[in-house]
Image (tube, rainbow, N blue to C red; front, side, top):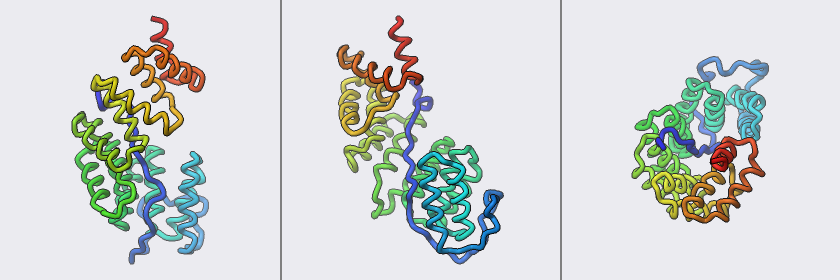
Length: 264
């Protein structure tokens, strides 16, 4: 399978960094601060609570209140790094990439040692297939010796290398991620998928076994398990994965693939 065509997981960090105050008090550029509360009186002490609430709404998939609170946070404090970071992720989710990049750049200006912000910006650049720039942003994240979640960035470096067709480099980065956090589910999944795509079903099984002990399997993981166990000749284990897939995700694309293979 072409590496760029794979469904890949890029790790986003949302509750990131602190609030970096700068001297410039201008409103953020662009039309993105334009909503029903735009005429509120700025109160700097209300900025961070609004930003954090907006991020919680975003985590819950409630994009409209998330946007409202994040925009409100930037009215209260246009230089609040965590608000720029959160709204950048939300704009990216909504497909407004120009606005997303504006805010990603702003948060890295406001908080240049915020590794999570650099990780998010690198992840964004990777999705735009700007791989060299993404790698540079990820490296900025890793340059901070106090970074608490380097496994996020090493995993994203691996995913980016996969998208760019550099399988050996991808494996190198993913192993570094697991060296930092041996039970990090995104890295374990990517290593399982990479092992399978590289023809090493036995290694893929080992990663899947570790992963299924840590997380509740989704459809992609269960379908991978079916394929791996079929290849290794363990019909009972393949059937166990298949049963979970049919029961828990009956409408998924993976279940359709499973049913198609069972009709042959």
